[in-house]
Image 1: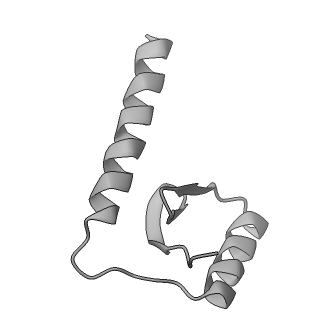
Image 2 (image 1 turned 30 degrees about the vertical axis):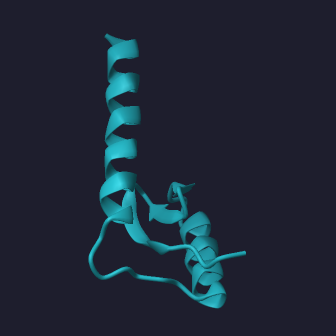
Amino acid sequence: MNRLWLRFKLWANQAAAMMASYQANPNQLDPDTANDLIRKAKNDGQTVSVVNGCLYLDYKFAGFMPPS
Protein backbone atom coordinates (compact mmCIF):
# COMPACT_ATOMS: atom_id res chain seq x y z
CA MET A 1 0.00 0.00 0.00
CA ASN A 2 2.82 2.38 0.88
CA ARG A 3 4.58 1.79 -2.44
CA LEU A 4 1.36 2.43 -4.34
CA TRP A 5 0.89 5.73 -2.51
CA LEU A 6 4.41 6.85 -3.39
CA ARG A 7 3.83 6.04 -7.06
CA PHE A 8 0.59 8.02 -7.01
CA LYS A 9 2.33 11.03 -5.45
CA LEU A 10 5.09 10.87 -8.07
CA TRP A 11 2.53 10.65 -10.86
CA ALA A 12 0.53 13.54 -9.40
CA ASN A 13 3.66 15.73 -9.17
CA GLN A 14 4.58 14.94 -12.78
CA ALA A 15 1.04 15.68 -13.95
CA ALA A 16 1.03 18.99 -12.08
CA ALA A 17 4.38 19.96 -13.60
CA MET A 18 3.17 19.11 -17.08
CA MET A 19 -0.05 21.09 -16.67
CA ALA A 20 1.86 24.07 -15.32
CA SER A 21 4.29 24.02 -18.22
CA TYR A 22 1.41 24.21 -20.73
CA GLN A 23 -0.25 27.11 -18.95
CA ALA A 24 -1.60 29.76 -21.37
CA ASN A 25 -0.43 32.74 -19.28
CA PRO A 26 2.95 31.82 -17.77
CA ASN A 27 4.07 33.37 -14.50
CA GLN A 28 7.75 34.02 -15.18
CA LEU A 29 9.44 35.00 -11.92
CA ASP A 30 12.32 37.43 -11.83
CA PRO A 31 15.39 36.19 -9.91
CA ASP A 32 14.86 38.43 -6.86
CA THR A 33 11.21 37.42 -6.46
CA ALA A 34 12.04 33.72 -6.83
CA ASN A 35 14.80 34.03 -4.24
CA ASP A 36 12.49 35.85 -1.80
CA LEU A 37 9.71 33.28 -2.25
CA ILE A 38 12.10 30.36 -1.68
CA ARG A 39 13.68 31.94 1.41
CA LYS A 40 10.28 32.77 2.93
CA ALA A 41 8.92 29.29 2.23
CA LYS A 42 11.96 27.58 3.76
CA ASN A 43 11.77 29.88 6.78
CA ASP A 44 8.09 28.91 7.22
CA GLY A 45 8.92 25.19 6.93
CA GLN A 46 7.18 24.71 3.58
CA THR A 47 8.21 22.17 0.96
CA VAL A 48 10.10 23.82 -1.90
CA SER A 49 10.57 21.96 -5.18
CA VAL A 50 11.57 22.82 -8.72
CA VAL A 51 10.36 20.48 -11.48
CA ASN A 52 11.03 21.23 -15.15
CA GLY A 53 11.70 24.88 -14.37
CA CYS A 54 8.48 25.28 -12.35
CA LEU A 55 8.64 26.44 -8.72
CA TYR A 56 6.28 24.73 -6.27
CA LEU A 57 5.73 25.82 -2.67
CA ASP A 58 3.93 23.17 -0.61
CA TYR A 59 3.03 21.42 -3.88
CA LYS A 60 1.27 24.53 -5.23
CA PHE A 61 2.51 26.15 -8.44
CA ALA A 62 4.20 29.48 -7.67
CA GLY A 63 5.66 30.36 -11.08
CA PHE A 64 8.30 29.58 -13.65
CA MET A 65 11.92 29.86 -12.53
CA PRO A 66 14.01 32.48 -14.31
CA PRO A 67 16.57 31.16 -16.79
CA SER A 68 20.01 30.77 -15.26
